[in-house]
Length: 366
Image (spheres, rainbow, N blue to C red):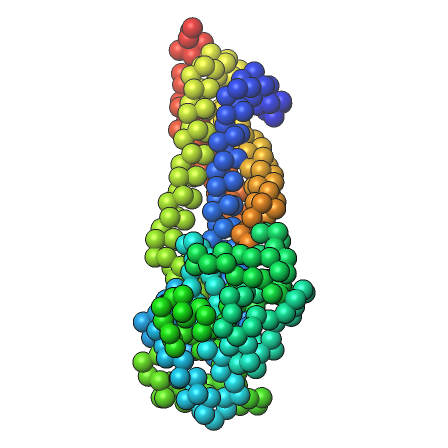
């Protein structure tokens, strides 16, 4: 009986019900997309650094956690020094440059990078020639830019010929010869990070300790420790704040729209509420009616918002293949819980207002 009455109430006010559902769906959509974008960026970076295959990372002691944001400040000559440490099998000095504000270009010496990572797995073409205006790109960047071997791309306002397309998951999406990248970043002989491969059977802690003694000014970490410290704060201190603010805005949207919708509904249904109370409906019954109505609106909003986020995720993945968005069941459940909670809180005052109405006064209401 109660459920039929709630559905009938929503159908009598389709525009208001639709606005409430859309507001909750926007709340869910914003939470899923903002969290998905941030987590996607972080976890994609972790996966690509892990894919290099290094055991230890050495970076500037005052550098950002993201090596490409640290700048090329360490002399490449340190690679020979680090290679002499007992237990070290290979050292790959790597330079980075950030172009267009978002794209990371890596500069490597192919020989040492191969010793650490096992080299690139080329799907088409092969390596660039030393000192040349040539580049290699991963398959995701190639698909996004419709690139093929022999085509030119613009980097640092210069034309670079694509010589190879490699399988993604090994550091950056674009690589140049190390001296060439250093030339365009005006940091000759400097790198941002050293990736170290240890010899089989040698404890990594032992090698890390030896490297720390040798280079106390640098940050020396095992790859596991390095990856565990990569968080949104390391991308930008403002990113977690932005994330929390946007999630807060989303919650406020759901709360206010449900509050206004049900508050107005209570005012319009004053006479109906009086009839219910005259027929013996208790305060608790009236509160449950309003809360259940808000719950139904929230559930419909969660479904619409989740479907919309899923559709937007697929569209963005198609339009921007290099943009990684994480769409997980864990965050779907959390976004749904947040939406249901904010809707329930938004319905509290209208529910208690309805329950506190005097039956006689409500019946006389015009």
